[in-house]
Image (cartoon, rainbow, N blue to C red; front, side, top):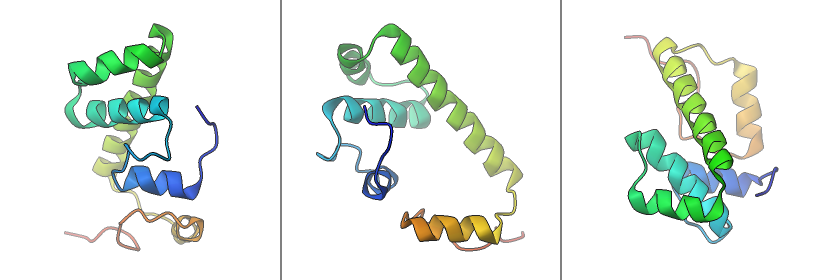
Length: 109
């Protein structure tokens, strides 16, 4: 698997195009696994079986830990709703990646 990904790859994941042919078969199954674990907590039997064909048990543990940590981080950020600095917003915008988020801090209730 690659260590560096192009903006187009990141955008494909953000857009839900994890089965895009721009990813290798190994990358597609890892992305599918991450999506199912993040969404449903547990992957389907078919996804897990496919994952076992491409990854060792140690790699699956590592992938699961990374997905779990990001899920925890996202929940913490969603709960805390920190202000996003203008500079961070500008860096993201300049990268070409579209997060589909409104600009500026979250609206106050």
